[in-house]
Every structure is written in structure tokens, then in C-alpha cells.
Amino acid sequence: MTYSADSADTLEPSFPVPDVNVATRLDSGYATAGGATHSSDTLLINEQSRLLEAGGRRIFKFGFGQSPFPVFDPAVEALARHAADKAYLPVQGLPALRAQVADFHSDIDQVRWDTERIVVGPGSKLLLFALMKSLPEADILIPAPSWVSYAPQARMAGQRAVCLAASFESRWQITPEQLDVHCRAEPERLKVLILNAPGNPTGLSPDIGTQQALAEVARRHGVLVLSDEIYGMLHHRGEHRAFARDYPEGTVTTSGLSKWCGAGGWRLGVMHVPAALGGELFARILGVASETWSSVASPIQRAAIVAYTRGASLESYVQRQRDVLGELGQWSAARLEAADVRVHAPDGGFYLFPDFEAHRERLAARGVTTSAGLTARLLDEVGVALLPGSAFGCDPCQLTARLAYVDFDGGAVLQTQLAALDQPAITPLILGINAIVDWLGQDD
Image (cartoon, rainbow, N blue to C red; front, side, top):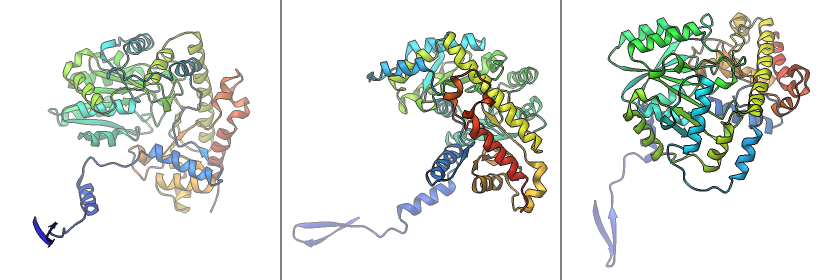
């Protein structure tokens, strides 16, 4: 750098003219950045649906997996009482909340949660990322289909995302044989298997035998299992089996309030890291937390203590959700199957993963050959918002989609013990499913 004098009292630096500007450098950097990612498909479809509705379109909102039910009333009341709480809380989470979470999950899951090995975070989503970021170099083994954010998070954390493709015939579950084959291929690398049951996007859980066999393979090869059990409480028959029951020493479990408590926007998740995994991993997770979110909002943590306190009213609230979701899931699956759409009836949560393969020739004649094309046409022509199977790691040419059967008034349904299908509150759901069936029967 040199200086030039334009006057006796002014010195201006003279810089060489750059060959590129900052935008060019950004574009060049993104082109080679292995950890780059884009917006979540689930959040994008939610915003897109809102914009279309604002423009006057009738949209059947099956794209975004948000609980249709109101937040548990006593937790809402506790939130109001603590609205003025403003103190930063411990990074790990309020001790009273961690103790309540430990009691809750130890009882529900029949496996011990240690209060001192629990981390409270702003939703389980960030806890999942914190874990991946805290690990040494690893292969993150991700079943396909699986939740849209696992693979992007793995890449953002500097890890290698590895897809393990499942099929309709295996009920969209990976097999113990698949896991064993991959572990044998590169035995020196740490393997982290992500499991989600009941699953997003499928609504399915492994049977007990399959889960126990997976646990045995994981134990044999020293695989760390990240068990995302955010939908566990919404197993329609109340039969969720925590993976840590079969592999307690190697399973990190996450859950939270977003699904069974209807409190997605509250952003409160919990993670349990077993003591058998040692102190370094846990310390690193807390380090990520301290350098990023600091602590979850104080009023939310206070309200969560109430949400995690078991009692007759909470049991009734959760059971009613299970009953309603089970009834609507079974009806939706049966209606689609009658239209020659392959789909497994769900075990829990509020998702179906229909396969439109039987309609391939007719859809191809209408210009539809991919899952993205299928969902785009459904949204454009009949206002049904779904997410394509490709968003969940499936082959783009596979004609699958995720359907979140949540477009109904959950508050109204909870106020009565009538069968869900007998209530006008679920009319949007019925109309939306019927719109898919009618569209499939059209000829161009």
C-alpha cells in the first residue's frame, strides 16, 4: 500500500484495484464448501403454504409436521406465571427441570436417565447438531428416508453423511445386516447411527426383534447410536420402546416438548448422554452450548417442569392425542390404499409415507416422473402440500412423498370424546386426502 498527497494536509491511501469483489469470493467459496447447506425443506413448505393461502388459495397443509393440538394447559399457565423471569440459567439446564425430565423418562422409557447427564437445549434439533459437532471424525449413518436435517447437520458439523437406503418391503427400516456390512467396510472409523422412531417421515417403528438385532450389531462394532425419540410419546398404542433399553451404554437419546406437548414454538429439547460414554463428549457438548445458545429461556424451562410432571390430566391429554392420531392415520392410509397407493399404516406420530409407484405410467403420461414433480403438481393443481421423498434422502425418481396428516383443529377434537371422524374439525384432512385420490384418477 502507498500514499499519495492531493494537498498539503490530506493523505489518501492508494490501493491496487482488486481483480474480484467480495460477492465473487463468496460464490467461489460456496462452490467448494463441503459443509454448505440450504433452508430446511419442511420450513420452506410451511412458508410456501402460508404465502399461497395469503394469496387466496385453499391449501391442504400436509407438508409441515407441526402438532395440531394445543399446548398442555397447566404448562401454559406456568409459562404465564413465570413470564417475568429473566435470569440466565445454567448452560446445562435448570437443575429442577433436569431432575423432572430424568424421573419422567426413567419411568416412561424404563431405562435410567441420570440428572447430571442431561442437557436442555432450544429444541432437540440444535442438540442433535451439538452432538455431531462434538464428536471426533465419524461416519453419520442416516437411513433413507429420514428427517430432512440429519444429513445437512452432519455436513455442517464436518462429518461424513452416509445414506443407508431402506425400502417399502422393510417398512422403511434399515436392517441389522445393512448396518453390519457398512461397519465391516471401514472398521477403523467411528460410526454414528441415527434412528428415529416412530419415524419422520414414515410414522413407523422397528419391531422388537429388529431393534434388538440392531442393538447387538451396534454393540459388536462399537457404534454410537443417536436415538431421536421426539415422537415416542405419540406411539398410537403407547408401545414405544426406547433404544436405550436394548443398548444403554451406547445410546444418546433426544426428545422434547414439540410433538407430544404441542409446543414446537417453545423450542425446548432434552438430551441424555449415558455415563458409559465418558466425560469428554459431554464436556464438548456443554462447550458447544455455552458458545452458542447459552441457556434456554427461563420462563420456558419453568413451564417445562410442569409439562414433565406426570399426573392424571397429562396422561389423559397424551392418550387422547394418541387415539385421535391413530384413528386418522389408519383412515388416511386405508383411503390411499383403496386408490392403489402403497402405504404402511402408521405406528405413531402423524406421518404417512405413500408410494405412488402403481400410478407411474399414468403419471408419466402427465409429465410426472419424480417425487418433486409429483408434489409440485399436487400443490399447483389441487392445493395439497406434501414433501417429496427426495427431500428425505430417497432416489428422486422414486414416487414417494411425506404426508403429515395434521390439517385439522386439534383443540376442538380434544374437547370431546367423540370419534375423530365424526367431527367437523377434521373436515380439511378428509377433503385433502380425497383431493389426492381424485387427482390420481384424472386423465390429461
